[in-house]
View 1 (cartoon, rainbow, N blue to C red):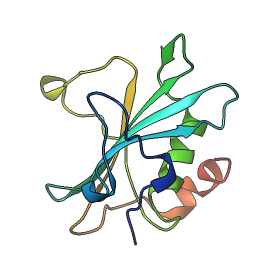
View 2: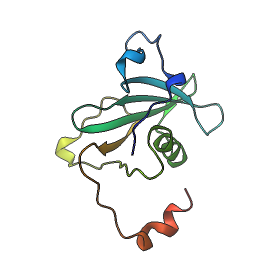
View 3: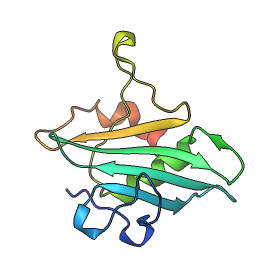
View 4: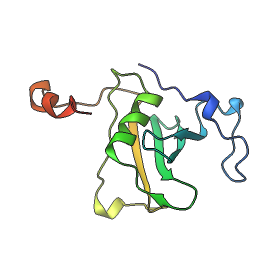
Length: 128
């Protein structure tokens, strides 16, 4: 199991979010979306016992929430196929919305995330 970043997509020029290789897995990564004419801005971090990627879709003139296909693409880009990662739906009282068009993927660095039995999710997940 490994958390890895697309090093060639690292943004080293953004005035607020630029990063370099010395930042390890932390930083801003701009990757081409599987949806034509869209770019995915991904902010990755791996501190505090969690690996995390926030994802925002942008096409130069507008922004939107990333779709399922894009989130599957990002999960596969930052984690291995056999890693389990999640999108949380927190308690309403714990919502933090710094950007209206961002979704997040999380994976703990200690312990495993429990998953339902494969026969309950297999047919649904095989379409991804």
